[in-house]
Image (cartoon, one colour):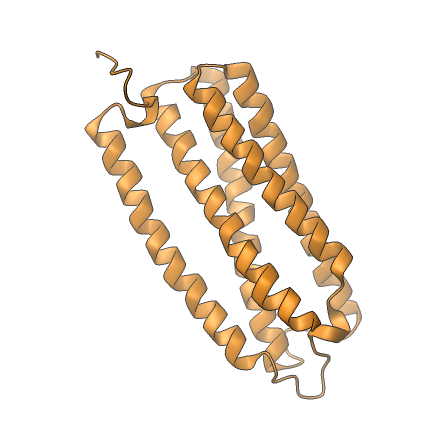
Length: 198
């Protein structure tokens, strides 16, 4: 197949372009999911019952660590895609590994945060506020976990096959997914943590 150098590798075929468009549609559905979870949370954030509220359980240290890890991972994911477009496999693999390690660090901090909440008696059953909080954060965390598994499989495929029309397309679609999770986190940081600490 003749390569059109005016287009990035991931857009070289109509099938690849359609996959990317289809993934944008999927992200539209994900936006609806997270908007629903945010609406539930913002409705219930002050329904604490006899349980603690955000001021009592949120700590700025872990939240800033999570934010730094996830936003930095988005940057390294972008560098990985840029490296792919330049045909630099070693740089791609390095940036991709860093992205996944940062994502793993984010999950580690989030799990520690959840364990701390539960240790303080703030569980899913304690109040409407806490159940909506755990569902929102847990859904985002589950998406990050899925991204780590997907990214690991993708990295193995690129290591075996190099940059092909298929692996380039999958890598770009993965980057869309990862950046989406970062955008969702910015909303969580702003409307859950910052609002809750005020």
